[in-house]
Length: 232
Image 1: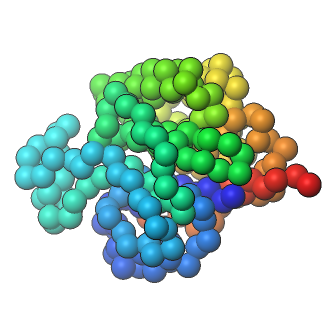
Image 2: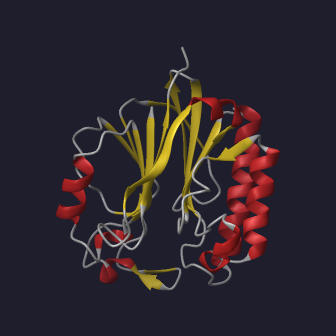
């Protein structure tokens, strides 16, 4: 099972056709896009959207219709090769999306999100962090097999604090992962702020965790993935 995530920056810097062509050539079971537009990725029979950002109006200080020249904006999209079996409510359904999927490792919940939609700008980053904590604490009581995936705007490497919203956000996220019995499979990737956090019981099944596309090829973020395979 291969899971990947990438912030595509609304395909403003690099045209959606280029992003679509590159991603169509990748072999992932789940792909979580953030700051996303609706791409046609035919290898995925299923895709699930956070609620669309309102059109032709100012939302959290920005008119997305003007900013994206009429393109519809979705903060998170989950592309999947298998259908979702359950959807969980979230506090901010324009930023986060929580779905359950049947996999070879059991029923897993993917919680896709962005923390820091406007990076350090208040009150958004603080609210999004609190929403993530509250959502994941609640969902994990129903199904503790939860994966937190997306743009966290945070490097977890000690020498990369300049890639973080602030030290408090970093420490709060670490505490959340520990409380929910999760590990960050992508924390050792350098200059990385987009992450795939998985349940600890899957640690021994990780066969790969690395970058699949470098920064400035498809967006101003790098894309990362993790491979999780059965042990025979």
